[in-house]
Image (cartoon, rainbow, N blue to C red; front, side):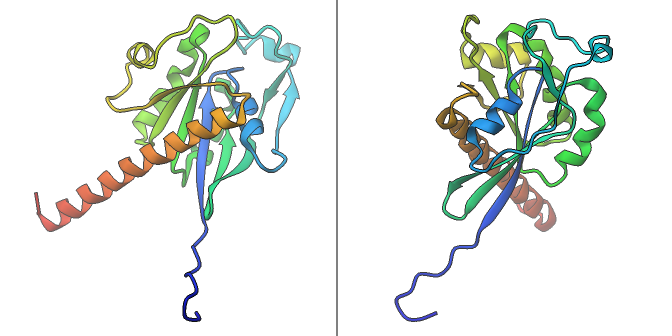
Length: 203
């Protein structure tokens, strides 16, 4: 490196999951923020699927993700996020373990009209100690609840961020991702310090 030149910044790519119930807006969020054409694995809802998928509250939905959505967004120079949108139905949950490997954290999208639909995702990430934020997708016509009310209703662990957002809006979605990266960074740093202290015997 010549004198006066700035050192090259190492590019960092982080894996983020976008999870939540059926029809909550996962595909929409990934598509809104992705700077590349998102990969989607959506298929038309079938008559057979109607017997196992609860479409209550999302009667206008005609397609469903059957594998994953994939997108990419650059947060700042040298920091990119790879987004993996998970399928929302229980019958596709076998994919979650594969998708979650190596992830920094997750966004759990929530719809206050069907808040119970995101309980499985919250439980999944809590039990696996994967940092996550809850992003409340503010649908038109839905009653507005504050972040504290949503946190209480979901019985979230103390400190888990709740963010209000519009999954259709790129800036809103980017803010959710920034909050996740900041929160996950703090969690992983604290865990690393705890591990070092336990090995060295320091308090």
